[in-house]
Amino acid sequence: MADARPIGVFDSGLGGLTVVNELIRRLPHENFVYFGDTGRVPYGNRSRETIAKYAAEDAAFLMRCGVKLVVAACGTVSSIAPETGDRLPVPFVEMVSGGAVAALRETRSGKIGVLGTAATVASRAYERQILAQRPTAQVTANACPLFVPLVEAGVTDRFDPVVREIARRYLAPLHAAEVDTVILGCTHYPILADVLRDGLGDGVRLVNVGAEAAVAVEAVLRSRSLENPQETPGRCRLCVSDRVASFSELASRLLGAPVDAAEIELVDLDRL
Ligand code: DGL
Image 1: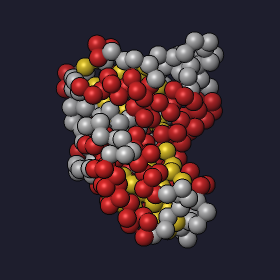
Image 2: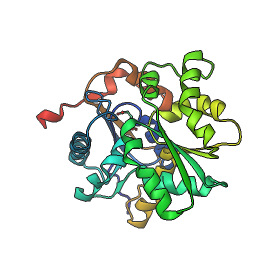
Image 3: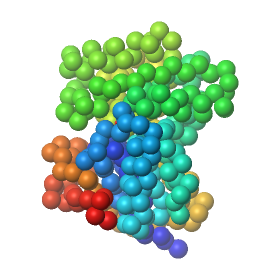
């Protein structure tokens, strides 16, 4: 029997649309509700307690929308507060588990790089999961605090000298460690994939954790008979905690269809 309830996806802001994009590509007949906490972004430089509290509130909002599964698109939440899922009455998918498995699948040398926010890198969540599965792997992680504001400001062109120079600096430790696989451990980084590919060179594989999460979501839906195999494409409801000028433009770009600013719902978490 079809289960038409939506899949809930949350992120600290607009970057999680990269994950929604992967989910829609893989599961076009599913319905989605996206919550971007644009009023409290960024999460990546906050304390563990605050990140866990925000994540619980974001997931609670999605539960009120009647979702059948919750996806933490945010790399920071996935690294710092994966226990968010323990308190939910529906399945929960985060980004770290799938990203770690994919990196081990892709690497030939066992030398893996991780790029993420300061909180994600400090948590060593990817490193722990990778080493638990392959103790001989070598993980080199680097925080890239300027990438998020660059993406939010629309500075993502692969030939832009500013973004190229910043990428060059962030990638230097990964070059020194001779990694052959790099996990894009933050929602925003797939938008910079061309710049990162140029900076890393042809021999290095990028792991898009959103694409891996979409595979995991599909498997969970199938194993629990939660799929929605309808004929027509699903709907995607977009909710934010503050109006952000670039949101509808980025949503249109990433979701492949025009998203009018009027379609984006403003949610006040304090009033729920
Ligand atoms: N969404 C966050 C992440 O994936 C990046 C932005 C932030 O710092 O909140 O880690």
